[in-house]
Length: 191
Image (cartoon, rainbow, N blue to C red; front, side):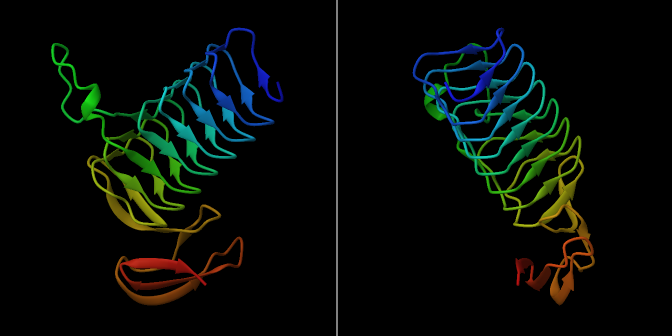
């Protein structure tokens, strides 16, 4: 075992866990889960059987990563944020064959108490503000807030808001990292 697991954690046989992970109090990891290296799973985290978690992911307290959710490298899941995997759940109707895939791309941040409705893709380095409800795909580097979540700006890989319009052609630098970003239409790239 090349990871730390608190004595109260439940790790089902067959779960794949990378080196240097930290698994804290009352975490449950199901048998089919795949977790990369260097991850941190806070208190009371649940990882489903068909969940895929990349390297360097930080999942804060009280988060459930259900089946069909994929978190790429360096994703941050804030405290008590929520994933869903069934779009129209009913207690009396079995819908396990209707799970929708959710993809959170590299470096994205999902703020505390945000909700990600299943079937969406969150772009690379996107930032979902605390308490936001995401019901559609979010572009790379987008800063979104609200219910439902709406884009209010662009954010750097460092996590600082960029001085760019929502649409158009422009270029700017992150004041902290010095990295340059270019906006073409409604897409941003690091240059």
